Image (cartoon, rainbow, N blue to C red):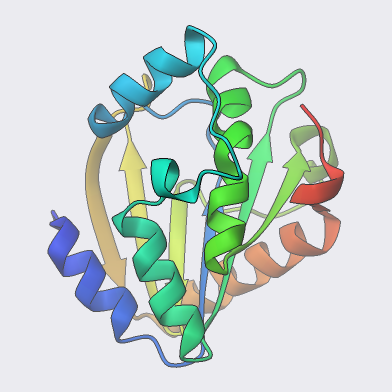
Length: 174
């Protein structure tokens, strides 16, 4: 099922307790990041003290849902040494945290004993799973959703196992 950004916004706004996101790729080819990634490659870094320069609509949404008591957590399973894209992502993760998201990093070598689904996913309130399917070059292909409780249970267990092993952002360096 293809999904627009507005549909995702409506979905995440409907969450009552928790939203978790497991990312397992070392590169994402996201068109709306092309300019920022190119600038980062040229040495540009976000200034934590200049919030106006880096605050964006996603952070408004994160702040909105966490302000109503929703716990938003993201775990990223990454190869080491990290890819250029992961170093880029790490450089601006402080913005997500400033908005209220909790983020941890799990070196891939520490994930070997975990049973993980084949695709990145969001799990909403422990009941609805949204798989984000990417091609080999990191381009988004499509989104699949299911409310199958066995699948939701698998994803919940996978996320919690990764979360427990993962390193909080403020302690993980790239």
